[in-house]
Structure formats: structure tokens, C-alpha cells
Image (cartoon, rainbow over all chains, first blue to last red):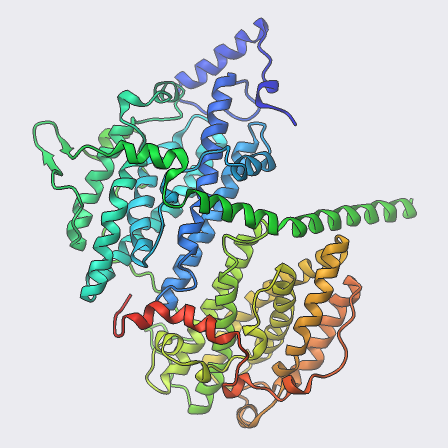
Length: 329
Length: 289
């Protein structure tokens, strides 16, 4: 195992390299896997990309919950495609993180051991079909606001993975919007279901942007490194600005009586976010933290014999190929 | 606050349109204007059998998503399930033209005795080896079926088969690769694969049983006689099993061969599967989604 720290030996000779790194960042250019980079930059990226990958993987669960019960075949197909996209995003992101010197196994083990973080939003549960709409509209909508700027993240493999991911996320958000719109145009029970889901997901989706700027310790460095482009609060404002007209089209109410556009500041005024809840869920005390991890661990453990079989089969095949080559020679 | 102010480099997805989206995929076998020819009552019954096979199998494979042995399999099994849902939608849509019922009406509002899938498709996922054994039998059968159905005298069925055959070819390859890996992997994987083949194979015979409906349809070139597919199916399976050093379970199972699924008699597994699939739709009669 190579730990990230082993890859960049700090030595006075490298000041040239460091200067080059700084120049690349200043020119808003890309850093590539073989380029020298500061340890802290590497660690920050490994943490961020692996958390992002883990979020995609854990994020499959609340939605896969409804694949078997989707209320029409079209919805079933769209939902399957969406959850499958999320597995694909996890794969691209794990690959991007691997270019920084961590293995997929290490990241998987950290996730299963409960040592790696993933987005807290997936610790909320999906009791109704309308949650599929709310996740698409609000959770994927917030993810898009967070992720579009990451397409220009200074680390090349991450930025490129994000371009692909954002294209698919944008489709996910629109299908979520369509689910809610359909419900809002449906029966009384369907409208109630949609509003209830929006009520439950609205605040957690605003929390996805992270703590307010003055309480976000890592943000400044990430912005200096061109990993992060906009502050948490800027992105949160932007998201709310996107939601308001869409909520009007659908006829759902955003559950904040104080939400209004302030002409003077040019921003939305809103109620105080309940950060206690955020920190509780982050600390593992959300509605489904334990269940999400248990399910991932079970899938991993139940599949161990399959992965071992594939590995063993591949080993035997290459042995046979070598033996055959030897026989020919 | 506009996207341009925030992001001088150009923002790919800042503006999310709220237009009503057309997410309905084109159904195979429909004309450019969205219409489908009306199926004869016999062709509708036949399409229902094929559609139910695909739907029930898709429902089963959908259960693997987020539970597969590795992420690549979440993607692969999800892909296969998606293909099958596509086949089911096209086939049920066509079946419904004879009675004025929609694909969803047929999927969600028929009871268990009205389902026409063969028993193989409703057998539970079991462990990964059981799913793969079922996939091998199902995809090898579907490949032979659709390969022949592309020449159907019914243009809608021919069009659906033409689209589906390319996909089930991939499904068959996926199943074959896993049979080889599991049979030739570790001791445990081989033990599980052998057990899965033994548990699955009694359900194979039913796929190849002819009855009055398919005989009438085959006479006019609409359907393919299931019995005529058996030699090609066996040849493919023999080849896979030879490479995997497995033996095809011998002996016929009369209770299976007598067939049940095509007449609406099912094993104990279909009821719970349908109950889960239909629960939400049935809680909201008349609702659209």
C-alpha cells in the first residue's frame, strides 16, 4: 500500500516543482496525476473525491428502495436508469481518486468500516413515491449547483469526471421535477404526497451546501487551490433562486414562511437553518445512518465469494495462457 | 443573481428548464406517428406471454441494484433489467391494442392467474449463482426466440424482436462469462454454481412446450414454435457447460413440462412479486404518474 504522503517527498529541489504547481493554479490550469502537488492538496482531493464517490454509492439505496414498487413501467425504467447512473458515477469517481494513490479497496473498506464520510442527505429515508421526485428535484438540484463549478476543478481527472456526471445529474433533476409535477397535477392524495416530500427534503437539501461561510474551515484553502469556486452560502443562494420559480410552476410550497427575495441585497432572505439537525445526522444520528452502512456492508460481504471467484478464475486463465505460451515456445 | 455573474467560464447546467419533458421512450414496434397496429386476439395473447416473461425477469433483476457483488454488476444487472423493461413495455403495449388496455393497465391491474410468464422467470434471485443460472437459461432461450421472431409475419412482433435480439445477445454473453467464472473460480463458487444449475434446470422444459395458441400462430408465421428452439438452445448450453466443465442436468421433470405459467398457474413466488410491484399503483386507482 502506498499512502498519499509517500508520493511527494518534500525536498528543497522541489521548490521548482512547487513554483510550477503554483503557476498552474494561478493560470487556472489543470493539475494532472503525474504533476507534483502539495501533500495537503492531494489529501484534500482524496478526501473530497472519495466522499463524493461514497455518496453516489450510498445514494443508490434510498432510491433503489422504490424500483420494485415504481407505479408505472416508464417510471420504473427511469428510476432504474438513474440508480444505475449513480453506480456509474461512483465508478468514475473512485477511478479519479485512484489516480491520487489510494485504491478502491481502501476506499471501500473505509466506507464499510464507517470511517469515510458520505453526504448526510442519504441518511434520510424515502417512505413515499414522492420522495423519488423530491430527491431528484431538491437533492440532485443541490448536487448540480455544487458540482457544476467542480467541472473546472484544478485537478484534471476530477474535473473531467464531473463533466460527465453533471450531464447525467441534470437529467436526474429534471425527472425529479417531472415526478412532482405529475403528482401535483394528480389526485388530492398525490398532491399531499408531493407537498409532504418537499416539506421533508427542502431543509436537508439546503444543508447539503455545508455550514455557513464563516463556519466552514476548509473552504478558503479549497478556493485558493481552485478546487472550490464558490462559497457555501453563494451556492445555497443560487439554489434557492433556482427553486423558487420551479416551485411556482409545480404549485408546491417551499416550507419556509420567511422566504422572500430581498430587492436591496439582491438575495433571498430565509429562516435560520437548523444546524443542530445537520450536526446530529453528520454525527451518525440521522434516521438511517446505521441502516445505510449495514446494507452496504452486507452487499459487500455477500458478494465476497463472487469477487474471489472472479479473481481466482482470472488468475487461472492467465496461468493457462502463460503455460500455453511456454508450450509454444 | 444570474448564472453569468457567478460563473465567468460559462456554466453548462446552471439553467434548468422547467419545460414539460417528454421522457417517454419510443416503444419498439410503434410507427413514427406513435401508433401501433392492432394485434389480433391470438397475437395479443402471444405478446402477453413474452411481455410477462420480460417484465417478471426485469422486476427480479431490479432487486439486485445496490445489492450486487460489485459496482460493475450493479451497472450490468441494472442494464439488463432496463433492456427487459423496454421489451416488456413494447410487448404489453402491443398486447393491449387488442383489448384497449395500456401497458400499465396490464402490468399493474391483472391478478396472478392472468399472468402468462413461464415459471423460470418467477423463480427467486437466490444467491448470485442462482441469478446467473436463471439468466443463462432465460437469455439463451430469448436469444433463439427473438432471432427467429425477427422474421415474423406480424410486423410489430418482428420489429420488437429485431430490437430485443441485440440486447439479449449481450445478456447471454454476460451470463456465460459469469457461469465460466463461478464454475472455474473457487471451490465455493463452483459448489454454488452446480447447485444453482440443478435448482434452475427443472424450469427449462416449460419454455419449449407447444400449445394450441402457438401452433395456430406458427401456422401463419406469426409465432415461433417453442419446441423448434430447443436444439439451438441445447447446443449453446452444451458449449457453455463444456467450457465450464458442467453437466446438463439429465431427466425430464413431468410436472414442469406440463406447463403452468402460460395458462396462469404459477409457483408460490409470483404472488409476492406482483404484490410488491403493484402495491402503489393499486393504492391510487385512476391516478397517473
